[in-house]
Amino acid sequence: MIKLRSKRFSRSSSKLGGGGGGGGGGAAANGGTAAAGEIKWELRPGGMLVQKRESQENSDEVMITIRVSTVSQWHDISVQATSTFGELKVLLSILTNLEPREQRLLFKGKEREDHEHLHMVGVRDKDKVLMLEDPAIKERKLLGLTRPKSWDPLIVQLVSN
Image (cartoon, rainbow, N blue to C red; front, side):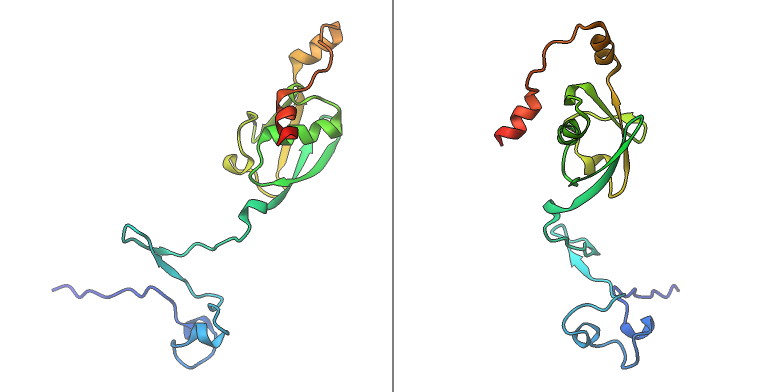
């Protein structure tokens, strides 16, 4: 015959070194907040019991600092984590005097497209992004075949918003 043991879904505060008194009242003893090591559980609509996510209030406004490195210099830029690489190019155009269409941004060895979001490809606080000048445009500049500076559609779109 097999003996089944039930698993507990929360840790008692007595096992965490929080002091005696048993396990009842860990949240009430801390002024209504959960103990430092206590796991909170939530029941999802499908009936699955999972560890509760830590809610980040104002998650839309999380700012990260990115170090953008060019061949000869680097810039620390603070942007929202949900920004796109196209928006990052617009900010870099102000600092480097290169239009966004002349820039190539590489993160983790891959060139990133303008529509990709920073947080979706894994860019976090204090990560490094490499900026290179587009070789085709660089060659056209040397040959004098570039067209006069015109407003980039991405800049017009950002300014109009």
